[in-house]
Length: 96
Image (cartoon, rainbow, N blue to C red; front, side, top):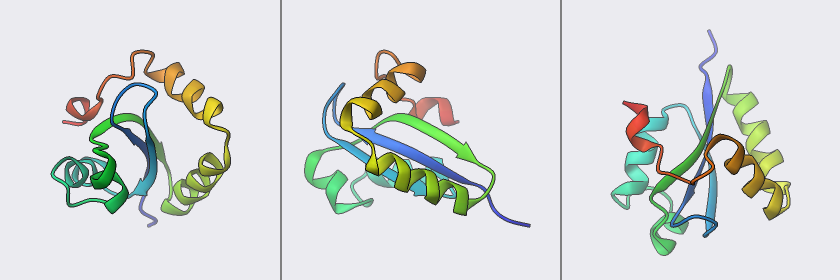
């Protein structure tokens, strides 16, 4: 049975720096970013706020979506986040 995956976006503030990632375990991966054991990019820019998360049936689907989102214009990414999270609130607490 294939394991699902998540595409997620981290930021430091509304409309700030963005990091797009993919993982099979969203809560634990976001926790890594929050305690600075995630990506060096997130650590360097203080990206600890989860503002977007999208679940996929397979990790391969999540990876394909991540690649698509990374190719998007910044304004499209901002609009996507705003459709599900208009205030750019930290969604981490909703994971538990």
